[in-house]
Length: 464
Image (tube, rainbow, N blue to C red; front, side, top):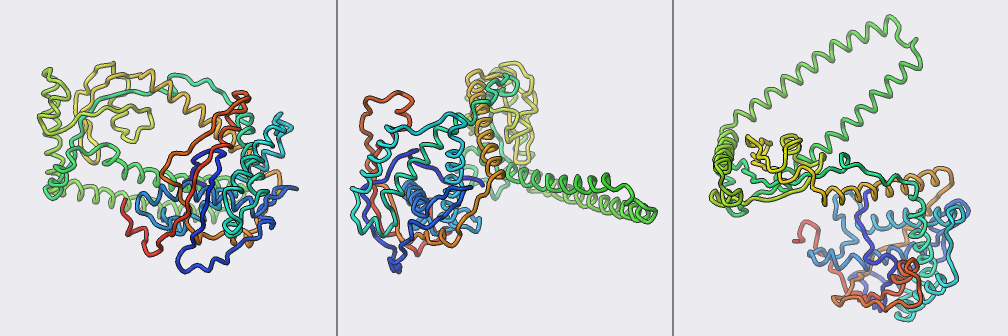
């Protein structure tokens, strides 16, 4: 599942809560904290632990969404997926806690343990949270000392296990695999007369703005192609497993199908060609592309004559920019045009894309700092993939169930927000560097206030 949530502090706690229900809520939605929410083989996660994890996410994120004018975010479908942010938070926390229990069940195998000092730190952090809140508030949000302690214990286990789980990952990455090149460029957008005013206001349309839609479309096409490929492979597999399927009648049917397919393909190609011609022949679009090309060529001539890249751009009302990218850059035309060019080389002709033209000069074919950083990213992704792979293996080999009726008790009838003040972290003493990475976040205090959330604003009405 694609993650959209994040934890502000890995093992931090929200303290100083004060409850305010949303308008129209009865305030009677207390949960049974002892009820089982998740069963992982022979172990269980209580509803109280899951609820605390969800409330932690809510308290950590709600301020951020509200800063963009989104009120009551956890009750809204902010991403157009058909799920509210609250539902997504619950699903992600169910997955995370499931993984934590799976990791706990493998601790001995990986040489991971929770010490008495760890347990003392967990108890102290949970106690601080409980003492910072009155009984009425704790009762309303369904949080107990036991739930907080168990949540922190599982988080500590997960954070200690996952580095062990990915220790066998290959950390060697070649320059070729991670290669990042750096270029400077000026982009000349295809702008019709109706759009000219908008362009003058924006001054420069960046690659991210002009090519993002193309990238999204490409991803969609890739997914569709993958689905079609999988279907074709399945059909071929059936034929290989049972050659007798191809009888004379089958061959006749196959010939007929082939003829129909060829006819359909021809018709489709004709339609595409017609559509392409129509698009190319559109006078406004053709004129806009011609204007963009003329500007790009004028700029290129200036630079070829020795004029400074930035100065020449400013003379045409443009701005030169720099970008570092690898072979997967979302402007493939730029990747292809600059591939193999020596440092300082100016691409001889403007680079055409669907939305305009780039004039590009290679600064560095192998940007060392960026390439080394990409190597680290590649290694981290390998580790993430390995961890996910192990969790999947463990889950498939075991038995995992969710109590959907119990989980449905978690509702969002109040708002949790963080204060504007910076969190304070007490100095750590008498701990090893390895322990400090885990213990310190446990002692981080985030002063949290609960405020009423307005329910009459929809996502479409909010303004960033």
